[in-house]
Each structure stands twice: as structure tokens, then as C-alpha cells.
Image 1 (cartoon, rainbow, N blue to C red):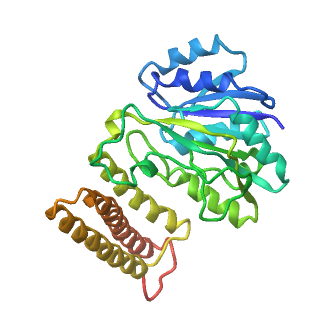
Image 2 (image 1 turned 60 degrees about the vertical axis):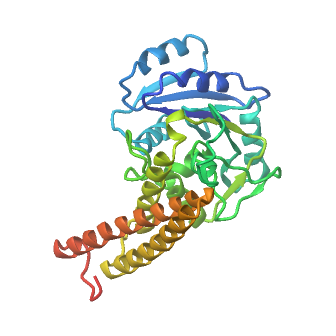
Length: 321
């Protein structure tokens, strides 16, 4: 098989060279090309790409004018010349055997549609003690062990390090544009939505332990404020993801909103009690409380959207909408 390594980038001209060079330095790799998708960057990324293209004959680039990671990924799928498209974030660096590790997973079974590997954090400094224990997960850390195997439905590769057969991705419709990062927004979920469709099609997602990447964590993200913002948007992303294409009734959305608000209140109460007693692990409850609040906010918007859709005749009326 031939691989296309797709690097979708937006305003990361400082980090992009490290990412591209890590891919160009692959060892014992299958045949591959490097495709950089510039998602309308404004920070000099175009000049950096021109310089990088002069250092490797494997690289080419395209500009995707529609802002959003899903738009950039879908453009990569259309432009790719490889049988498999391996997505690598522009703030990540591939290990020397990354492509070889991914190829081992795809070669293990003809039903493998996707594969992903470990994500290790490249931290500018030790994590502050005030951050909750779940912080590495929100920064992207992932490790499911050292065995090449099929992943369960609940085991998901990270979007910064996963690969998919191009024909499968195109057949399944690619990535939903309303999900995924859009500029400075921390919206996510486009990879989970795509993997849901992979599983629904009866195809397999495999774990490739020999394909690790290092994910650079920006110093500005190593704060509780950023983590809470990330958790809020994760909750909102989950609602968009769960609604899918059919949507839900207003009553269902409101019921879910009440459930999420209660969950948020319980976590907030526990957080407050721990903070009053001077416990340093109070922040462990802050992140899930904000994520549940984000879900509740999203469910409220979904309920309103359901009512408007019925009013405008976009979907059939039901007694509980």
C-alpha cells in the first residue's frame, strides 16, 4: 500500500517544520507522500511550506479556503494519492518508525479500516500540581498497551495520530464540517463521529503500538482556565455528536439537559467541599462539572433547534417535540 501523510495546518508556522521533518525522516517505511493542507493560515505558513518543499521531494501542498479542521481533512482525502491517509497534527512529531507501525496494523487483517497509535506528551515544563489528574487526557495523551490488536468500540485513537483507508473514508462521507476545530474554537468530535460510522459499517479499528507520536503542548494550555474551556467545549461537542443527522426531540434534549445539570451540580458541590478543606485534588471535580454544564448548554440549544425544525416543517411533528 501507498500512504499519504496528511498534515492539516492553521497558523502554526513555528511548529510545522518539526512535524514535516519528522515524517520525512521515516525509516523502513512503506511508500509514502507528504500532503500539507494549509487551512487559510495568516501567519506566514505559506512561506514556510515553500521552504520545506525545497528540502524533500515527497511533499506537496494545497490550500483549503474553508476554515475548519474537518474541511481540511476532507480536502486531504480528495487530494491524497495514497491508499491510506495517515493524519498527523501540525503540533505533533512522528517517531522514526511511525509509518512502519501503522502499516503493520493495516497488514494484519484485510478488514482493518482505521488504525492509530500512542500519543505521548511533549511538555515545555512539568505539569503544575494545581492541574487535575485528568489533564494529560485533555492534552491528548493515549496508550492502550503494546499489542497490535483490534480496538473495542470505546477505545478510540486520537485525531492527531490515526490513519484510514482512503476509499473507506470517501464512501462513509468523510468528516462532518460542524464538528472539529474551527479557528480558535475548541470544538471537537469529528474523529469520534467518523469512527462511529466505521464501526456501524462492520469495519475494524486497530491499535498500532509501534506508531507513537509526540504531541507538543503549548505552554498557554497548561492552566486550569484552558482545561475548563476545553471541557466546556467537549460537552458541547458531545451533544452535536449524539444528535447525528436525525436530531432528537425537544423533550429528549430537555431531559438530558436536566441530567447534565444535576451531574454538574454534584461535581461542583464536591469541588467546593474539597476546596474548603484545603484538598489539592478539588480540581479533579471541576473539569467534569464544567463538561456536564457544557453538555446541558448544548442540549438546551438542541431542544430549541428541534422545536424550530418542527415549526418550519423541516422534520415531521411528534407529540413530544
